[in-house]
Length: 229
Image 1 (tube, rainbow, N blue to C red):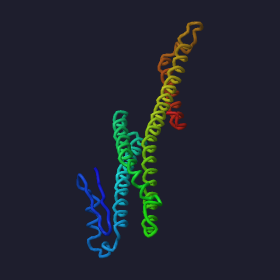
Image 2: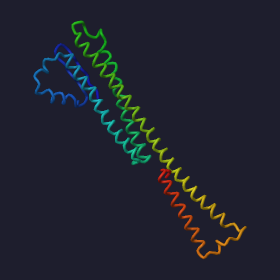
Image 3: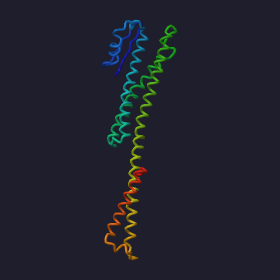
Image 4: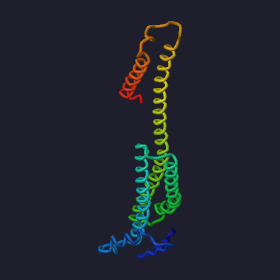
């Protein structure tokens, strides 16, 4: 999108290669106002340029809404790696496009804010364009912040993935302890060094199995209570 401004005494001419949405928005907003014609050319151009900056803020709001939605999905564990990667690429690309489109405006806004651009009679216009330049700098900061926010999503996803990995390791450790202990008991009972009267009991085998199951159940209850698994 390219917009050219031709500004003179009490007139402003704009030329663009496509339809400009905020021009229509300005017309609709000011159609019932009677003081729009009282603005001088500099103030009117400043209002248009300010609206131009606002369009980037609106685009950033949409990106931030998508970031918040993805952030919530990550925290709830509702996103898979492929889906997350695709969303990250899209968000990073959108922010990069905004930055690439917006930063070339720096020369224009800085030039308008220079003291020698306006005469002493136009001091009010000079002050207005200084404020407009500050508005531009704020927009640049917000874009940079949005890029950092998008990159921060990867750190959040990595932290969530590490949390899941830790949970899996805890569960595997729990299973290893249970199986290992029961294996030790079974191995000890299977040694033939001493013949115990217990082995002559009709229900000895089932008693041992029941004791092992009871131990596993108690240990599992303790593990859930301590949030080990």
